[in-house]
Image 1 (tube, rainbow, N blue to C red):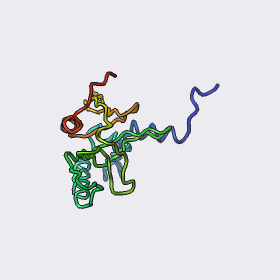
Image 2 (image 1 turned 60 degrees about the horizontal axis):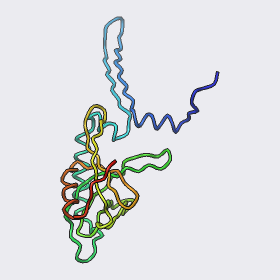
Image 3 (image 1 turned 180 degrees about the horizontal axis):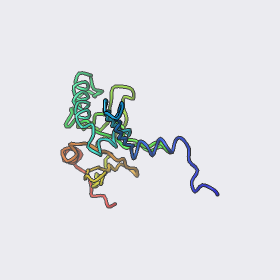
Image 4 (image 1 turned 180 degrees about the vertical axis):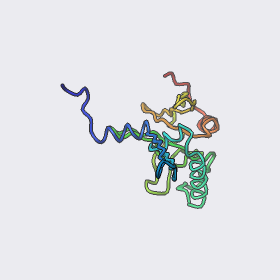
Length: 187
């Protein structure tokens, strides 16, 4: 009998991180029929994104966002002379290369001349686009483990990128105001 799909460690880790694994175990140690020690074990193994989608680790996520905001405001941003920041917020860029698909975190900036996602360590500038190269922005509602989430597709040239920010509507309105020439994109 042949397996339906070839799989390996990479497929197992990918599925584990995307879907997650929950372990619940209750152990009672008895001596002579008398319960002496009770042990309740609960463990979750998944990617941070999956845990957040299930409503887990929200306090950690909030403290991480706060830390990013504090850390990035102390660091000198790579701004050109005369460039002013109109919007700044923690968010993500979807990157998909082969079997590696993930949300890359950073600090989104909209200035009077460009839009970029930047993080101090380790990558620096993740993506940078002149503001006048932005053709349009569309939003989509994604159902992620029973919760609605708004993600955006940003169009430039013949390409697009998918982004997610918790302050997405404010991002969209500042981008529309700043770029001024955005057109409706039919998907």
